[in-house]
Image (cartoon, rainbow, N blue to C red; front, side, top):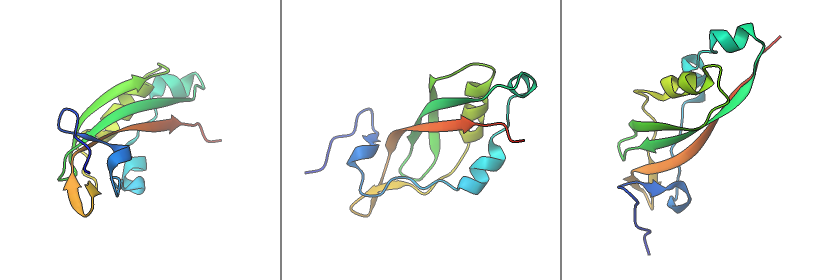
Amino acid sequence: MRPEPIGGYYPLESTTVGPIFDSTLLAKRIIYPPLAKRQGKEGVVVLRLFISASGDVEDIWIVDDPGYGFGEAAQAAFQGMQVAPASIEGKPIAVTLLFPVRFTLRN
């Protein structure tokens, strides 16, 4: 029995295959917020992503934001992004999921 989507998006748990992100591209798109960098801050942002059956990131909600510009930087990294779509039994579907973005300073 196929689960019903909520608002047109299936929860990640109901997929056979989740969306696949290009981690190299994503890493290039994430820009460390200057304020956080100057103050030596690190943090984790949790986003709720809404991904279409064609793999477009259609909406991005900031669920948890430690401040210092982290939330906006994480959100901006996903805007206009294309991913390999999620599927159920081989059929592409729209999906929503929580996605943590960790900001860590490197020495």
